Length: 199
Image (tube, rainbow, N blue to C red; front, side):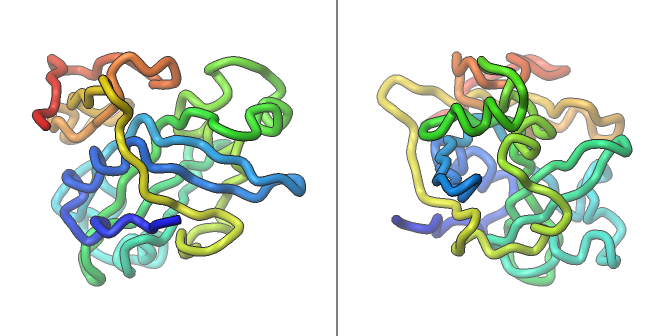
């Protein structure tokens, strides 16, 4: 039960390091465990980031201490979850784009009303499955009911770095990372050519 010790690093360094880490969520009287398999990095220098342009009421969690949960509401219907990164006072976060169920998949399937990889292979899908909404923004991920724990890649797994998805600004920045070949990854490539991250 070890909390990641790298969250104060730049967001683009934190994002690939989060791959393989686990989220432990208390849901419906059960502990559900999922493994992070896809992320995207954002910070205040990034035109696509909510932190761009400085601290405001909406994004202030991103400027707080690392290890907090930053959530936002998008398209009038979906929530997305981010792990706050970097040092306090600098706005940055890592979007959780996809997770793989490890324990309690049936709980997630029930919440999503479906089975298979579509339960958590996207940022809004995983937020719905894990019951993450605006009430959880600012939550300390060291504590229940949602905890982040250190993890690592499994033998033979590789990390792919590519461009981010669903943005119009800084769309060519290679700040998306995913575990190659994992079935829960939302899309295999972004706008640019994908490349493996060197170990």
